Image 1 (cartoon, rainbow, N blue to C red):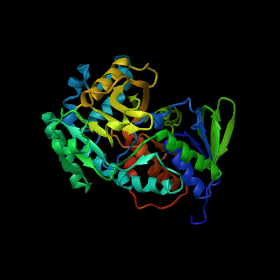
Image 2: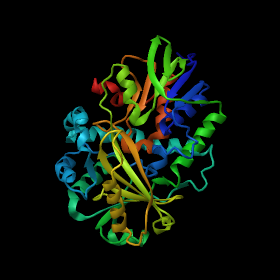
Image 3: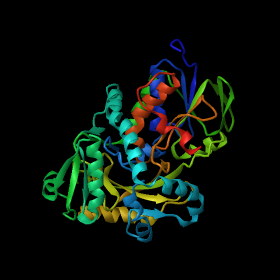
Image 4: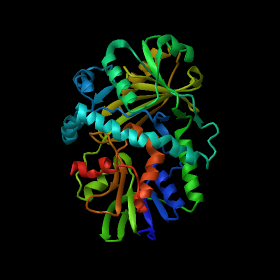
Length: 419
């Protein structure tokens, strides 16, 4: 095994997971070809890495499989001014997802997810710092921490979050309203308290960072082919066939890192993985990024604001509605209204954007080989944390491809849990 070296890898998806995986494999001397229907360097295409909140969130271990949230779901869905929405024409397609979700929405599952999110999140910033030493991040990354604020309305939920993070050894500093206003004096005092994660950082331009990592991948010898991949199969023990609309490509191994679009390929491989999408939105308030100096997330509203080079980005909400439904203007209005609640002086907004968060019902990603096709490796399902987990996913997946040993327990991320 020590002398083994993979001869070639095809990666489907040039988002942050695919690009970081490709970079790590190239560094190991393994030839890599990235496939995507969109060019990461295009100024017209606006992928998830363009539109996300830009947070590097190593503390974000708690997800939505929490019993305390379950009680509020019906109320949130019925409210037009709430952080959760559902496209009712899509509900029948999510029944299987909901079945798994309710099964995983309990204290034991919540703590299991938190433990294994922490395992990889705790390594996430260091993995990025390694890459940042090789690219120029001037004006692209800021290390000022990230603030979460809340009202006293859901104190039990806040206390639960604080306890779980404390038990895992995550650094967090609780703040009073007055302490928050000292850090961010422009905020309207409509909240009661909060927390700052002082070790967190944020991107001033996530897509700008993705482009730099992609260019580094190309400079080191990686290849990119812009095409729409339609089929993947393991044609023999050491051969994967990838088919686009016009061409056929052969590799020893392949990685599926297509985010919310991965299910189309995994269904072909005979795995019924309940991957679906949380639709998230953003808007920009141009020239208003100076109103706050770091990201601020208002937990009661399920939205946040990040100072970026494009302006102040207001981002958030969860809309369950698949990949085909058109954007919802009500979700945009909700984000704008929430932003102006915290910063009343905000003017008009621009750049309405919709993106897709690939989410599994236990809120852990799938990292590892396909059940029936050991040379096809999965790297998707990172939900709200795709950006945070890009670099560490690249390290983990490249290690799996190269047959390296790891001291991480990767079993909880296997697709076996759904099959």
